[in-house]
Length: 310
Image (cartoon, rainbow, N blue to C red; front, side, top):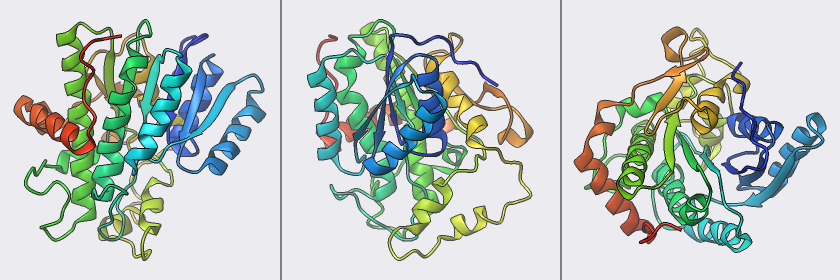
């Protein structure tokens, strides 16, 4: 079991903190002394998760705030609220995501749901929170990846799957590959600008959460082929959120984590077990694609890097 170092006096934001790995990460950060903002789409679910954590850790410092990563106006309002508070942010954990809806759906801004929720929303949130992050002493951004990214390809001609026959699994893979590119581009930018920011990522292996089922319940509720197959893979090793959260916790808090580092389970097939260094897909290392995707994300979200560090 990974032991989170003492985080007394630190402030953290965890997206998707109402269940699964997000709730576990919020719990263990708070138990280590951090003040945690549980960033959730449904406040009632976030409050229930907060109460569950407080029942085990009565002295945990937890706030529940609403953010919908599929709505850029919600992202802006959430970030503006934190900026107005003025408290430096030591840690942003981009954990939330959606997986494999049964058909093509769109965000409030007209993006394909997975690209919008898994990449463009977190991108906008990260960039909007950079002034608070850069006001902290040693800030970090830890972003959740996925083994599915290895099957991804960034199609700049059709990022939103408007022209092609929609594939929920390939769209998911593209969105998670985009996250890995963001991890590396943010690390590169921090190095170029001399920021003390560490950007790293992780994947949870095969962790039993509602990620595989919640996306499938959207729309008409018809499960995609990929989701249907996941429910049948009982023969593969899997683990509970307590273990599945550890790679991202490591990326977020370990003194040994490095810029652009990527971590995952080190057990059977890379699906379970204690955290170890993992390798991103080859396409995540393409610097030209990375620069182009970052520029496209800025254009689509209307959010750009600050000119000066705070």
